[in-house]
Length: 245
Ligand code: ZN
Image 1 (cartoon, rainbow, N blue to C red):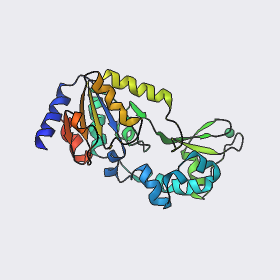
Image 2: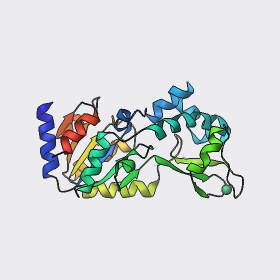
Image 3: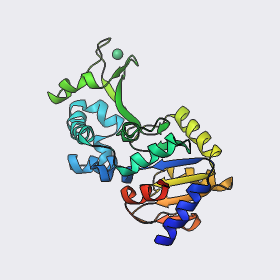
Image 4: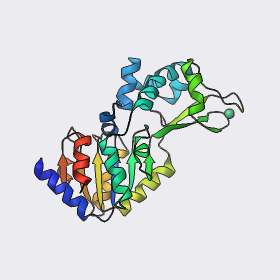
């Protein structure tokens, strides 16, 4: 592992433009469980049965009673050393952006500015009827009373701006993330097992244009054999060790 760490450190030092791709494992050291497994954990249900748009429309109160648990956990969480290390790398002008599957906003709270949140975020909610977008924070009291928040304009249901299981990823954002990948010469994949499409395919575009790949994840991924350095460790230890220099 020391040899892989040294190799990764050297790749970061030599890279002109680094991009990071982060998944749930990036926030588990902050105490946030995976959105997908969390759905099952809190609801004792198949995640698709609670965290899909169809389920949300069918029974918004049930959705929100599950969602409140996730929200409370996220609001209490703090960025971990891996978030801070990426923010520092961006501040030093070395990181072209963070592409993340996480909805917790911890990259921004750590100081990252260029963040592509492929699965959305918790900062806002949108009316399913009139499309009006509102900040999420004023909705918290209603959520805590166990109510599903409604639009002041039209009374429609407000849905948090997170991508649910049966929804498409935001295409504009996806395009911007791909543009960042095209412009980088090193991609750090961290805290994701690369099992969910289309995110699992993103590193391929970097490899296709001759860019380098570092993978930091507790479990092996299908791209380990094609990566320049592979570190099977906690991101909170490994990422600062790689980018600190
Ligand atoms: Zn409305």
